[in-house]
Length: 313
Image (cartoon, rainbow, N blue to C red; front, side, top):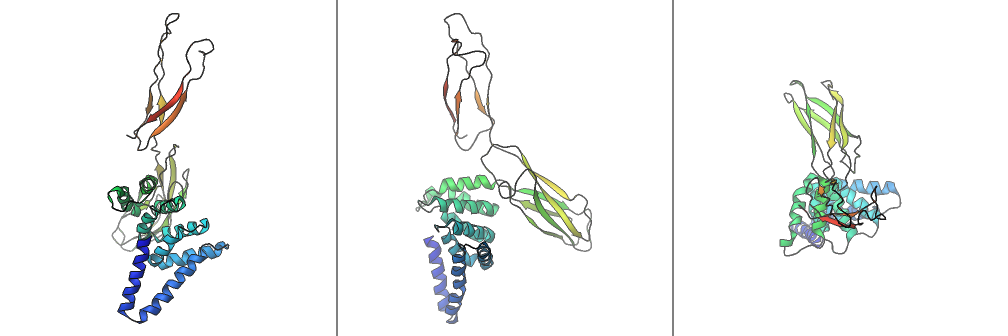
């Protein structure tokens, strides 16, 4: 984060050169940032929340200090700093990308990666850029795996279309909010709420909900977007269902049937293990034989154990 510190100092120099009154402005303006950063670790959760809200209101100006706070030894400070950076959003992305490369600080990198996942789609271009760090003259330790994992978790957005049945001569508004089904906000998707406004003549708007990917094999999951409180219109269909399709590969093994052969003869049974789809990481599994009606004690077969590994792709 040295680069971030240089940018603050450069801004201060420019402000001082432009006008003498700016020196007072800088002292007054950056004081609240530091004060609220300290409050992020308060034992009082209300004070913590007030500090987060104040820093979010300060916006991009607070981002460098919040990025530094990700390095704090106090996990409460790190959590609150990450939360504030998420709410500030896109202006925080470059600083969070930089934090992915903090050497020998896995907690910092995890906090930064988690914040980037919550920011979602606006962070994707920078994360893709981070994957090519090897070509940079200043490689950042640990960055590729955290950037890659963050990209996987961001997943694809779900886009809902809200339509008005016919053009209106007056503005039409409707409130919307997401709700859990079998999917859970915060771990499977990012909750959203707000108001859509249709200008006169407009008939279509979209709501984009960011889905949070993972590497867990699980059933497909659902959430909903619900409409309420319309003005200058009535609600026809007030609920859209989003289905998150699990895309982790499934493992299967074939059955084998063969004649056992004559006394003293051995026959190889070859079982084929397959993945339902190629994966972007190695997939490893253990295997072992287990008695059925055939038993090792009766010398029906020879027990086997081992490991299988599917390489990426």
